[in-house]
Amino acid sequence: MMCNSSRARGVGIILVVLMLAGCQNPEFEKPDGTVLKWESLRGHWVLVNYWAEWCKPCLEEIPELNDLDRSSAIVVLGVNFDDIRGQELIELGDRMGIRYGMLNEDPGPEFGWKTPVALPATFVVNPDGDLVEARFGPQTEEDIKELIGR
View 1: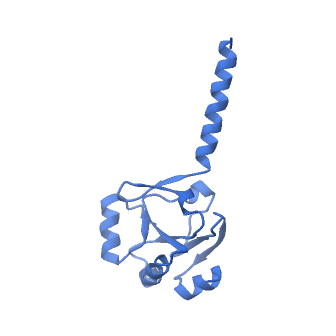
View 2: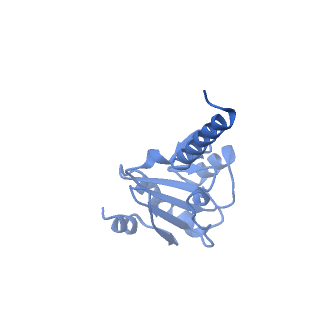
View 3: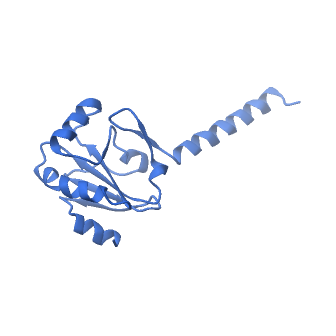
């Protein structure tokens, strides 16, 4: 028979293991309220693009990012720098012509990324989930495909 302190220790260990397991698969809310599990992106190149409505170079790169997101090997995720969320973010994205996915929250803190100080900023994550590079300024489909070897 287990004593209370042993049982409590066992429960504590299980909780720690569960918490650590949760850290390995972060989840991020999308503007429509659904959840994106980061692990579901494994096997794809992921571009996390920070943008703002007032950023002219951000507007210039949207068509390029839309084209990149159409590739079966690349997923583009937009993060609004001004912290616009939910339905307001969906409407803003529609007005700006954004066709790729967007997140309600910045995934950077979960991975230890520093918040960009200049826009646009694109964090390039390889299919294994490792940050390869942070790029600043508007990206082109050609530049990104050259970087990832496609």
